[in-house]
Length: 302
Image (cartoon, rainbow, N blue to C red; front, side, top):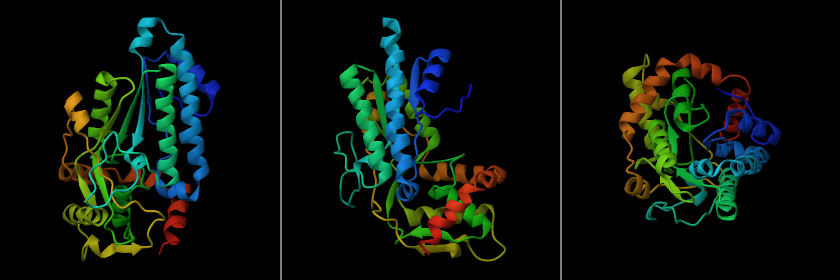
């Protein structure tokens, strides 16, 4: 069953709880792209902060009315990001669950706010919450505003591959299937009130990621002449661009026995193959308002 509902619409949420009587809530709903948050922060405050508050209130009302056994078994799992911890230098240790929050973008600030609300609803009202903070996801069906699908789409279309600044910013990459398996483990066996970092142990510089993508495309969909690397274009850096993210996922591995199944190399190969086999999906998603946004965002940085 899929219901298209605004998480800021309390009446609609109450109706869903009454109809479906869930045993758990997995809260994925969010505005999630840093560049969009820079151009339009209001949407991020509304969805990520007000929306999370509204969902928590609807959940709390529903949970309070459950029989005691069902209340004890219920879980509210909030999916968040490592960006709430801010930026690391090259020598800083990886983010742990006790790293202080230091968000640097409207996106990460609103996600930090939602994390704190979830924590407060556990400690104040007893709601059995769980929070996961994940590193950068990639894989099939990712919206093409994100780095990896954007580079694949632009490469195949013969367009420039825009790399921010010097391309040396570092991200820790997590294959979407591994993220899903981690969420299943946390939902099933996580301790209410706890947070768990989810990462793939794959720190890569952005330029290295783009080079690897180009090399995979050169092998699987070669151009008539030259390499896809020839399309790389350096553009003005993102305002406040965090230099490095890196997740320490040892708590999740130690306490719940989770480990990622994919290396960056195997996950990226699967991802490129999927986009090559599903170009019609990518083309449809990348039409209309999205195309206008990309043109606006990157035209200003040329």
